[in-house]
Length: 209
Image 1 (cartoon, helix red, strand yellow):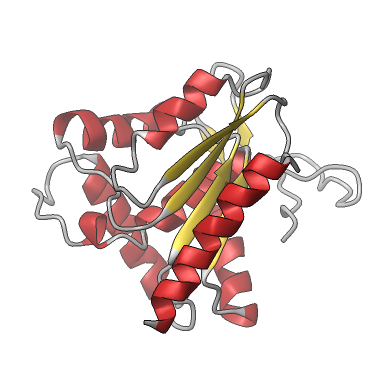
Image 2 (tube, helix red, strand yellow):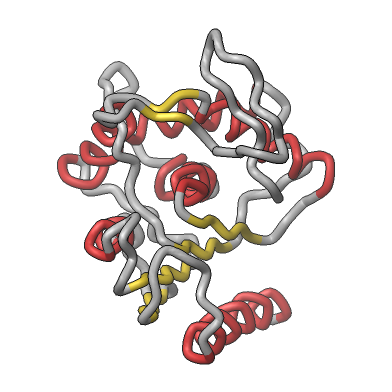
Protein backbone atom coordinates (compact mmCIF):
# COMPACT_ATOMS: atom_id res chain seq x y z
CA UNK A 1 0.00 0.00 0.00
CA UNK A 2 1.10 3.61 -0.55
CA UNK A 3 2.02 5.99 2.19
CA UNK A 4 -0.71 8.52 2.98
CA UNK A 5 -0.30 12.23 2.22
CA UNK A 6 0.76 13.50 5.66
CA UNK A 7 1.05 17.18 6.54
CA UNK A 8 2.21 19.22 9.51
CA UNK A 9 -0.22 21.36 11.46
CA UNK A 10 -0.78 24.70 9.74
CA UNK A 11 0.56 23.55 6.38
CA UNK A 12 -1.45 23.11 3.22
CA UNK A 13 -2.02 19.54 2.16
CA UNK A 14 0.68 18.26 -0.20
CA UNK A 15 -0.23 16.97 -3.62
CA UNK A 16 -0.51 13.19 -3.10
CA UNK A 17 1.21 12.66 -6.45
CA UNK A 18 4.22 14.74 -5.39
CA UNK A 19 5.03 13.75 -1.85
CA UNK A 20 4.11 11.03 0.60
CA UNK A 21 5.56 10.11 3.95
CA UNK A 22 4.57 8.02 6.96
CA UNK A 23 5.46 10.81 9.37
CA UNK A 24 7.36 14.05 9.70
CA UNK A 25 10.19 14.50 12.16
CA UNK A 26 12.19 17.31 13.67
CA UNK A 27 15.69 17.64 12.26
CA UNK A 28 17.11 16.92 15.70
CA UNK A 29 14.88 13.80 15.89
CA UNK A 30 13.19 14.93 19.08
CA UNK A 31 9.75 13.90 17.85
CA UNK A 32 7.79 12.24 15.06
CA UNK A 33 4.59 13.88 13.88
CA UNK A 34 1.49 12.08 12.59
CA UNK A 35 2.91 8.58 13.10
CA UNK A 36 -0.24 7.47 14.90
CA UNK A 37 -2.43 8.80 12.09
CA UNK A 38 -0.45 6.66 9.67
CA UNK A 39 -0.69 3.64 11.97
CA UNK A 40 -4.47 3.99 12.02
CA UNK A 41 -4.42 4.48 8.24
CA UNK A 42 -2.72 1.09 7.83
CA UNK A 43 -5.06 -0.64 10.27
CA UNK A 44 -8.09 0.89 8.57
CA UNK A 45 -6.82 -0.44 5.24
CA UNK A 46 -6.41 -3.90 6.80
CA UNK A 47 -9.92 -3.83 8.21
CA UNK A 48 -11.39 -2.88 4.83
CA UNK A 49 -9.23 -5.12 2.63
CA UNK A 50 -7.83 -7.86 4.84
CA UNK A 51 -7.12 -9.74 6.86
CA UNK A 52 -3.46 -10.09 5.86
CA UNK A 53 -1.00 -12.74 6.99
CA UNK A 54 2.05 -10.51 7.18
CA UNK A 55 3.53 -7.13 6.49
CA UNK A 56 6.59 -5.73 4.71
CA UNK A 57 8.10 -2.45 5.83
CA UNK A 58 10.71 -0.33 4.07
CA UNK A 59 12.65 2.51 5.71
CA UNK A 60 10.15 4.73 7.60
CA UNK A 61 7.59 2.00 7.14
CA UNK A 62 9.70 -0.22 9.37
CA UNK A 63 8.93 2.00 12.36
CA UNK A 64 5.20 1.44 11.89
CA UNK A 65 5.74 -2.23 11.02
CA UNK A 66 7.65 -2.65 14.27
CA UNK A 67 4.72 -1.20 16.20
CA UNK A 68 2.27 -3.46 14.37
CA UNK A 69 4.37 -6.56 15.02
CA UNK A 70 4.79 -5.59 18.67
CA UNK A 71 1.00 -5.47 18.89
CA UNK A 72 0.93 -8.97 17.38
CA UNK A 73 3.32 -10.37 19.98
CA UNK A 74 2.00 -12.15 23.05
CA UNK A 75 5.42 -11.63 24.62
CA UNK A 76 4.63 -7.92 24.66
CA UNK A 77 0.87 -7.91 25.18
CA UNK A 78 0.89 -10.48 27.99
CA UNK A 79 3.99 -9.24 29.79
CA UNK A 80 3.36 -8.51 33.46
CA UNK A 81 4.63 -5.01 34.19
CA UNK A 82 3.76 -2.14 36.49
CA UNK A 83 1.03 -0.27 34.64
CA UNK A 84 1.77 2.90 36.62
CA UNK A 85 5.32 3.07 35.31
CA UNK A 86 6.27 4.69 32.03
CA UNK A 87 8.02 2.00 30.02
CA UNK A 88 8.04 0.47 26.59
CA UNK A 89 5.79 -2.48 27.33
CA UNK A 90 3.11 -0.32 28.95
CA UNK A 91 3.31 2.06 25.99
CA UNK A 92 2.73 -0.79 23.52
CA UNK A 93 -0.03 -2.38 25.59
CA UNK A 94 -1.83 0.96 25.79
CA UNK A 95 -1.36 1.51 22.06
CA UNK A 96 -2.89 -1.91 21.39
CA UNK A 97 -5.84 -1.07 23.65
CA UNK A 98 -6.32 2.25 21.86
CA UNK A 99 -6.38 0.48 18.49
CA UNK A 100 -8.89 -2.08 19.78
CA UNK A 101 -11.15 0.65 21.14
CA UNK A 102 -11.01 2.40 17.77
CA UNK A 103 -12.34 -0.83 16.19
CA UNK A 104 -9.18 -1.33 14.13
CA UNK A 105 -8.38 -4.88 15.20
CA UNK A 106 -11.69 -6.65 14.65
CA UNK A 107 -11.12 -8.22 11.22
CA UNK A 108 -7.33 -8.09 11.07
CA UNK A 109 -5.83 -10.88 13.15
CA UNK A 110 -2.32 -10.51 14.60
CA UNK A 111 0.28 -10.49 11.86
CA UNK A 112 2.08 -13.81 11.53
CA UNK A 113 5.33 -12.45 10.12
CA UNK A 114 7.13 -9.32 8.97
CA UNK A 115 9.83 -8.53 6.40
CA UNK A 116 11.94 -5.46 7.17
CA UNK A 117 14.05 -3.66 4.56
CA UNK A 118 16.37 -0.85 5.60
CA UNK A 119 14.95 -0.81 9.11
CA UNK A 120 15.88 1.07 12.25
CA UNK A 121 14.63 1.49 15.77
CA UNK A 122 12.56 4.66 16.30
CA UNK A 123 14.94 7.61 16.67
CA UNK A 124 12.54 10.25 17.95
CA UNK A 125 13.24 10.70 21.64
CA UNK A 126 9.80 9.68 22.87
CA UNK A 127 9.59 6.39 20.97
CA UNK A 128 13.33 5.72 21.28
CA UNK A 129 13.04 5.89 25.06
CA UNK A 130 10.15 3.42 25.11
CA UNK A 131 12.02 0.77 23.12
CA UNK A 132 15.30 1.34 24.96
CA UNK A 133 13.54 0.82 28.29
CA UNK A 134 11.85 -2.34 27.07
CA UNK A 135 15.01 -3.87 25.64
CA UNK A 136 17.69 -2.71 28.06
CA UNK A 137 15.95 -2.45 31.43
CA UNK A 138 13.01 -4.83 31.18
CA UNK A 139 14.79 -7.19 28.77
CA UNK A 140 11.54 -7.95 26.99
CA UNK A 141 11.75 -8.69 23.28
CA UNK A 142 9.54 -9.80 20.41
CA UNK A 143 10.31 -13.51 20.40
CA UNK A 144 7.19 -15.06 18.90
CA UNK A 145 6.74 -13.39 15.49
CA UNK A 146 9.00 -14.62 12.63
CA UNK A 147 10.86 -11.89 10.76
CA UNK A 148 13.31 -11.32 7.92
CA UNK A 149 15.74 -8.40 8.08
CA UNK A 150 17.23 -7.25 4.77
CA UNK A 151 20.29 -5.06 5.22
CA UNK A 152 22.12 -2.99 2.60
CA UNK A 153 25.86 -2.84 3.25
CA UNK A 154 26.15 0.41 1.28
CA UNK A 155 23.02 2.07 2.70
CA UNK A 156 23.79 5.79 3.05
CA UNK A 157 20.35 6.68 4.45
CA UNK A 158 20.07 4.11 7.24
CA UNK A 159 23.56 2.82 8.14
CA UNK A 160 23.66 -0.95 8.29
CA UNK A 161 24.71 -0.72 11.95
CA UNK A 162 21.37 0.96 12.75
CA UNK A 163 19.55 -1.88 11.02
CA UNK A 164 21.59 -4.43 12.95
CA UNK A 165 20.52 -2.71 16.18
CA UNK A 166 16.90 -3.06 15.09
CA UNK A 167 17.32 -6.83 14.66
CA UNK A 168 18.16 -7.14 18.38
CA UNK A 169 14.54 -6.39 19.23
CA UNK A 170 13.67 -9.81 17.78
CA UNK A 171 15.20 -12.71 19.67
CA UNK A 172 13.80 -15.86 18.16
CA UNK A 173 15.31 -18.56 16.00
CA UNK A 174 12.71 -17.93 13.29
CA UNK A 175 14.20 -14.57 12.37
CA UNK A 176 16.55 -14.40 9.42
CA UNK A 177 19.09 -11.73 8.49
CA UNK A 178 20.33 -11.29 4.95
CA UNK A 179 22.78 -8.71 3.61
CA UNK A 180 23.07 -7.33 0.10
CA UNK A 181 25.72 -5.19 -1.57
CA UNK A 182 23.36 -2.34 -2.43
CA UNK A 183 22.11 0.77 -0.70
CA UNK A 184 18.77 2.05 0.59
CA UNK A 185 16.50 0.08 -1.72
CA UNK A 186 14.54 -3.14 -1.96
CA UNK A 187 17.04 -5.53 -3.55
CA UNK A 188 16.24 -8.04 -6.26
CA UNK A 189 19.27 -10.27 -5.87
CA UNK A 190 19.01 -14.04 -6.10
CA UNK A 191 20.38 -14.47 -2.56
CA UNK A 192 17.74 -12.21 -1.00
CA UNK A 193 14.96 -13.78 -3.07
CA UNK A 194 15.98 -17.26 -1.93
CA UNK A 195 15.96 -16.26 1.74
CA UNK A 196 12.56 -14.56 1.49
CA UNK A 197 11.06 -17.45 -0.50
CA UNK A 198 12.35 -20.03 1.96
CA UNK A 199 11.04 -17.93 4.85
CA UNK A 200 7.56 -17.56 3.39
CA UNK A 201 7.42 -21.25 2.50
CA UNK A 202 8.22 -22.12 6.11
CA UNK A 203 5.45 -19.83 7.35
CA UNK A 204 2.77 -21.26 5.12
CA UNK A 205 3.90 -24.86 5.36
CA UNK A 206 3.62 -24.59 9.13
CA UNK A 207 0.02 -23.37 8.79
CA UNK A 208 -0.86 -26.56 6.90
CA UNK A 209 0.44 -28.91 9.59
